[in-house]
Image (tube, rainbow, N blue to C red; front, side):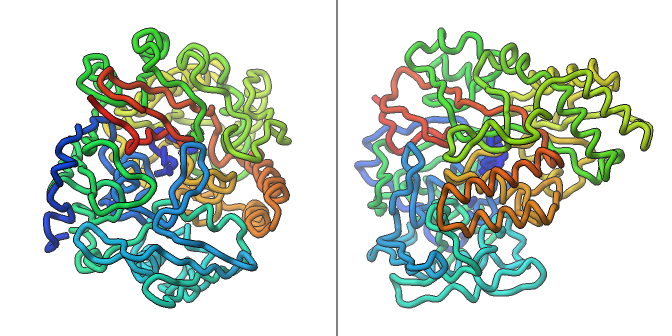
Length: 538
């Protein structure tokens, strides 16, 4: 998510998060074939990516949509979240610690460079190296040789031959193969390392789509993709390509959908929640997805560190009337959160100890706030930063009113024009308020909602949270051989989060979207993203 891939949220989500030639032909885009020209281009909404499109440096939805279309990893996830081999021929292990991975022979990038074992190993080494400062580096921490403190190659990666490589982990990890569909594990051509910045503007991939031409990414406007004729995996495109339009707000995108100027929309604006199902009829989409919404209050902000900060976080959480907001603002398209993950993920529980901190309780909120004031009297105002291009003003205003009325403090939203602008300030640690967060899952497992966001030094740990007991439970769960036992560890880890509240859980999001009258076979996957390659038009 990726940061929802943090973009929606996604949620879970959270946002789920959330990717990316110079001298190579056409910026990596081969000449479209006659067959691809004969099929229609699908138009859909998106957002300006935060970073150049290098897969290991994308952790948000806007960039994630693009790299997932342009690249093919070892596996991909079907509509229900099950992993399906893509570039991989097989992924095997006898001990869940050392894996032998064989890739299919004859695969190519769109510049005709072969996809080999080195394409994966070199890309992972680049992503993991400290000096490259990649947002997805955290995903390599379980591989031998990874370091947060010094430039250190992944000694656990070994190329055996052009189609075989091995991965040795520091500890057994039963869900490692499940993780390999995430974008951080995509391969890169050798051309990428000649000028990684130029590559990020015109990525050369091996997936079902490719850039229509060099310069197809028109910043703050759109990106045009066409079918990659060389791709022969399970995601072969049934259309002629994608035009992903970066809308300044969801209202404009919805208006285009209603006018049949947009084919597919995956985010209905909150102003249309009460009417969109009537407007669109059987073309409306409202289904559960692995998206989790929250906001984060960094401990570095005044009044939010130590015991005082713990009390204030709990008070603010209990001052928000989630039931009322999800009913009035979201018209039932959201469900109040009772944990930090998603009900669509195996192992989810609504019976965690301490989850009552997520319930509206004005009396207790006032009591906790007063206890915090006894430590240090409150000064200033409380604000939540959000991106104005994402349709968040309605719920932010409602939450701020709930906090203001309950605690008797000044509280308001702090809008930023674009998702990229807000995320840059958050990533740089220069933002001086609380901020909207969330997660859209990268792969269908509880750990993915926890490790990347709250583990010490994790890539999407925007609040810089750290708790050794939480980290220990994450590690224990990751090394369990039994999934049920692992999920119990992850549930116990969440009970620590409910005490510390490194983020304030808000609600789980359904994917609410729709499509135009000229497209067919529109389905949304487990992670709320349309399955673009299946869509037809005409």
